[in-house]
Length: 198
Image (cartoon, rainbow, N blue to C red; front, side, top):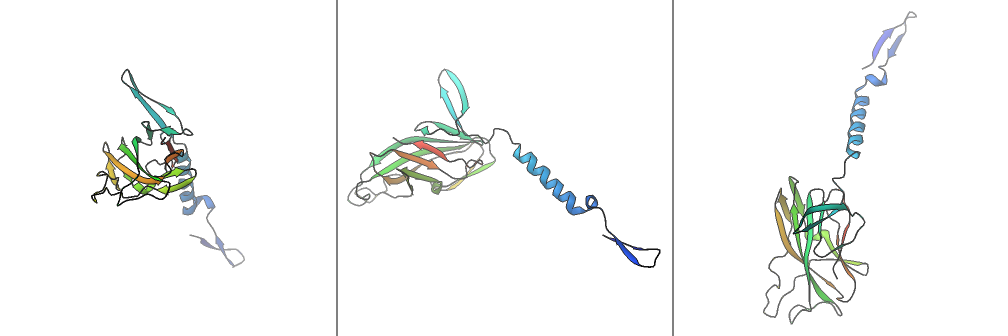
């Protein structure tokens, strides 16, 4: 708040507070300090591949630029993602893939290792067939009209320590080099995770 002062000449002058005594200045300082400490975060957001064998403990290495393989367990920000297996299906009399393509059936496991809550969504995954990235939301029926998978990955939340395993289905040319691309919000560093499917 400014202060009014009457000068010797009888005129009224307004004396303003110095900038460092103003509320807006200290709010700005607090925001800048929070941003500075936030950007100093450690390696918790790095994407790592977790290796485990019967004779050794799990070990991690930074593989942020690496393309993973089926069976690799990928860990970032307290969450792990693993592609368990990949199958192909040419459809039947009810469900037919597009000409020249097969159904790609991908089974994944997501585990919340140490976050309070994490959300997952099948729309966070895409199948990449020579740069053409499409959703994995196909429904495939057998000749009796039954869904060929009974464990479709839906959307939901995992509390700490919880795991979900589910199946994603898309279409691609079986002989092409196929990749699973994860671009969702499981990992706070928003890294794009790439997994070779064949």
